[in-house]
Image (cartoon, rainbow, N blue to C red):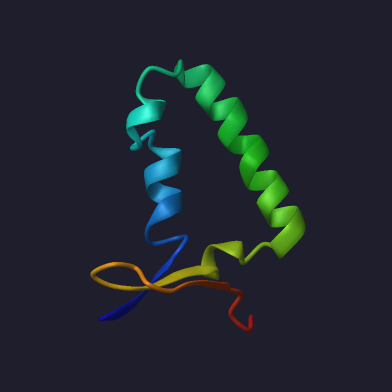
Length: 72
C-alpha cells in the first residue's frame, strides 16, 4: 500500500513537541533553540510552505521512498 504524509501532518508536530525518544531528555530551552534554527533553515531552502513537503512510501517494507515538493 502506498502512502503520503506531509511534514505538517507527521514529522513537524512530533518534532516540535519533542515526541521522538531521543528528544525526551533534551532541556526545553535547548530544544526550542534548535527546533527554531531547523525550521528557519528548512523554510529558507524550501519556502514558507515547506510543511507541504511529503514523505511517500510503500508498505509493508517501505520498498520505495520518494521526497517531493508539491506545487505551491
